[in-house]
Image (cartoon, rainbow, N blue to C red; front, side):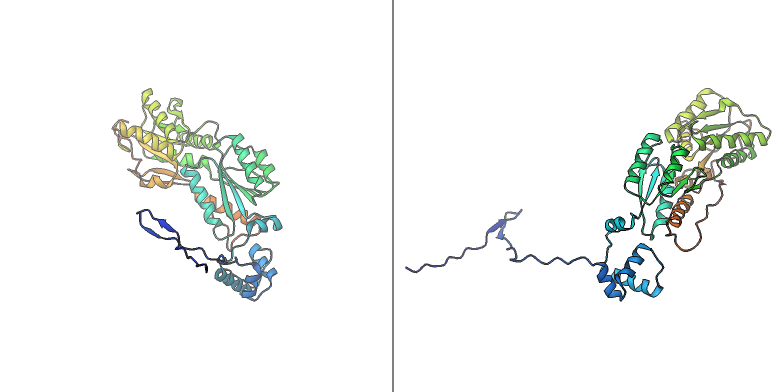
Length: 370
């Protein structure tokens, strides 16, 4: 008896709705996956040698502009992506810049980091940002992590690493400091005159007619806090005014510290008509205390901050504050590192304008009798 061939229908698949329908069959041969473009492909399309493409990618040598344009056009057309790991092994460069900040949520440090990122855009370098949380041991650990990843340069925003530690780091790769001053081989520093900033803030209040001016200081161990306090003292000396030590309360540069300091000032019962806050975040906390007590700014108390963080100009009322050009310092620090690495963009190093006072609406002459 002749065998009959039996054909089976394709298996049924039950969908989420309960409907039954044939399962799609798999192709007998897998679909060929497009291979990524190589340096050789770019060279062939651009009409140059693979060595020329490599020189353009690494910036190792100057190349004629027409060849550069042809290579860039080929890279775009082929959607070529260089193997950065392999390039790093060959050239000793990872095309990364380590950025040691302190607090990721801090508007001050975030503004500086934005400046760094803006200056690196288009350079082929990318930032790796790590926080140190104002802890020298943690900062050292984070820097060790960055150096283990062989970053090509390091940007340090503030912090408590010692000058000796920073000078030692600069022997391994270029180091740019923001908000610190250090003269050592391989170190570039970008800072602003904190004493002058404190003097400008306090002088403004004195010119408004205030004579009893409180100061919410930063942490006593912080150099910026020390120098801003010195500016506060200097403005009093220049005006021939004495300073009441009872009107100086230490904060921590954070909103919570500003709250605690303002509550302490009010609880002490000392007379004062204005407050110079060591930074904007302290002022925001101090201002919240006054709001909760029904004390209007500047009618009841005038307030001056420091840093000119972006939010300060949009508060109610907008904050009078000393402008630190943190974004510009970030740009200048990144540009300086690129220059040290031989990859600086065309043009001059971005300028960092001098510190200045931004007079807005939290200051006014004292009320009669104050």
